[in-house]
Image (cartoon, rainbow over all chains, first blue to last red):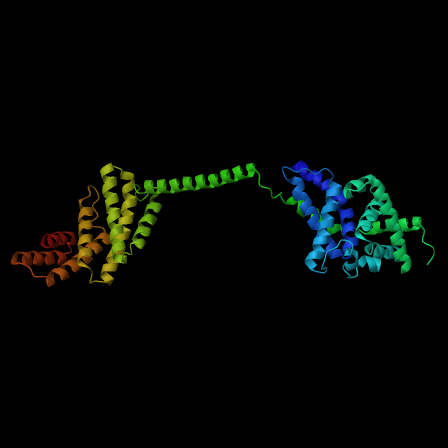
Length: 168
Length: 234
């Protein structure tokens, strides 16, 4: 049990920032991001410590839980009639974050807002690859798409992002 | 806006790494999660739970047996024994549960202690006699005070006290007839008995015996007076 705690502690340290960031970019609220991230790690710990636990890739597992938790969050808030993953960025929490005001530079704030407007499939892939340095092969595994498709999606995502920024 | 190259855009995306959770929140969450045991119920959990419940049941049963055992042992104790206070508490609890009057409780206490004295005298436990006598004196004093304060008493109760005093007088080697507390009790009982018999219809012989008892009372010979009075009552 002690060993399991220690192992999960290391996983937590490795992923807490990544998962929080992943969630934050989707909900645009520190409070909501903390709440959802808490649920993600609690759920992960429950699954990880289960006697019959079979988690092959903890990173993928955490991102999957996080993605689902974000969808659940919007579903609970009743802010979407059809919780289409594509429109989630458009309905992200509008409250202004401290990051927006104080921490993020203007350029980075622009790109953050633009990422939130991306289609979900592009958004996830761009975050994972460019922000979290996840190799394309891993993204392919995580999304269940061929690596080539992921490369094309990355290219399209960047193009879409660039278009959003330039529009503003 | 200057032309946004792909490289510049990727740099800006990487700049989002500045987004980090609050350190204190992250530390607190970690400690909370790792402090929380996984809520999965395994067979071992069930077994240990049953075992734990059984342990409690066994502990409770053992405690119950010990209490019953101690109470059982306490029944055979006399004043001065370590477990005597338990016997006294048990007697008082029983009296309270059966709703006895104060007089009846005091009579029962005196009767119990006199029986204790008879037992230790019979067993030859001389070392216990002084402690029992102390208790008897205290009970006799309480009872005498009660009878003086409330002279009109139940004849059955008075007869019971008289019988107890007779038993006390018969215990070998423990003459308490000259003890002031016991004398006071004799006096109170004799007064009540005389008052009771004076109201009753007596034969000539009984009237003579009552007159003799009164004389003995006047002479301060309360125990003898009581003997006479008991002869009339019987």
